[in-house]
Amino acid sequence: MSSYTNKGAAKASGYLSLLKQALHGEEMDYTQGSIRKAVIMLAIPMMLEMAMESVFALVDLYFVGHLEHSSHAIQTVGLTESVLTIMYSIAIGMSMAATAVVARRIGEKNPEEAGHSGMQAIVVAGLVTILLSIAGVYFAPEILTLMGASAETTAHGTPFTRIMMGSGIIIMLLFLINGVFRGAGNAAIAMKSLWIANICNIILCPVFINGFLFIPAFGLTGAAMATAVGRSIGVVYQVYHLFNGKHQMKIKISHFRPDLTIIKSLVSIATPGIFQFVIASCSWIFLAQLVATTGGDTGSAGYQTALRLMMFFMLPAWGLSNAASTLVGQNLGAQDIKRAEASVMRTVLYNVLFMLAVSLIFFFLSDWLVSFFTTDPAIKAVAQNALHIMSLGFVFYGIGMVMINAFNGAGDTWTPTWVNLFGFWLFQIPLAYLLSKYMNLGPKGVFISIPVAETAITVAAFILFRKGGWKKKKV
Image (cartoon, rainbow, N blue to C red; front, side, top):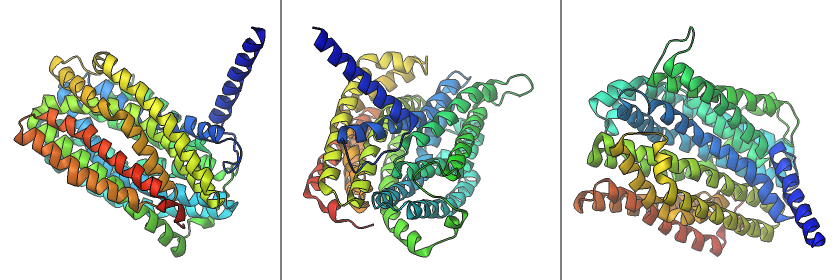
């Protein structure tokens, strides 16, 4: 009896030690040793990092959901986030390229080139994002109207949208610098930067929305102000650690001087990666617009509430799947293809277990989760219906995420791009339109199209992964 107790205590102590190492950010060689340990060391901070990213929208949603005219405020937050996914797509696409190239260089034991490549990604993405931000600020009212917002919602939400679109460069830096750190295997710094940004946002949101002492109440606009300031503080933390030299990469000011050879390599990887996420983002934008036109302000607010809750749980799963990206990149750099493949399959197992737990939470606790953000019975009904239907495909989402990140980590960004193009634009969008418009299911038809399409995308990605073309990719 005592021997079993001692073994159990030793095992628990081992897991606790591993958790502490992961949260502390201890660097290790991910091309050697236990694959289970490698996945956990990367996955824990990456999951917490992505959970923190999703908290931004949830915090905004919580506070604005209790304002007067809450349906307009909720709709504005949701529709703006939907449009911002285009900017996120550029940031994620470039961060994928940075992660792939930095991970490959680290696997080759070349930290100098790893730092050089990461900084070139920041230079390129920064220029593009600034141009998009300027356009977003100028066309904010037209963007909301195009997304299906009513005239009253557009009038209430334009300042919020302008601030969020204008802070695009901060969003890009937050994603991209974290991608550089993930590629180097230091996921803890990426995680901590999001913690800091979110703590600031949580503190500032009620202050800017409702006013405090000498600070006036800005209402809905205050939510955007708090998010922009919080993210900016997170970026300051990232930049400090980028240059302090206490990690594998070696960053110098000279690394920011444009290097056309590296830029060309990054762009060749990032371009399909950006298309990959733009394709998915535009699909989500179309679905949001379809719900707004068939379900009105109430249907749109309910769908956006469900979507924000879904993303809160989906982003940690995406963070877990990011572990596959780093492990594939570093192990391919070390010429260990079998270890790269084994790392992906271990990550799939963990993500399936996580998403299964999320499915059960959504099925049994949807009423409580939705009630936290809105008391409007009509909005709650739509949100619960959406959660129940969308959660049916969560296990498949979990597998698909890992497959896509495995391709991206290898630098094979074209394969998931084609999968997304066919899955989203040629299948999900027509299906959603057919169900909602021609079969008169309204928003429910849109909800049904989501798990059906995601399941089809996962099956296609898994088949292509097993074919193994990603193993031959050079970056």
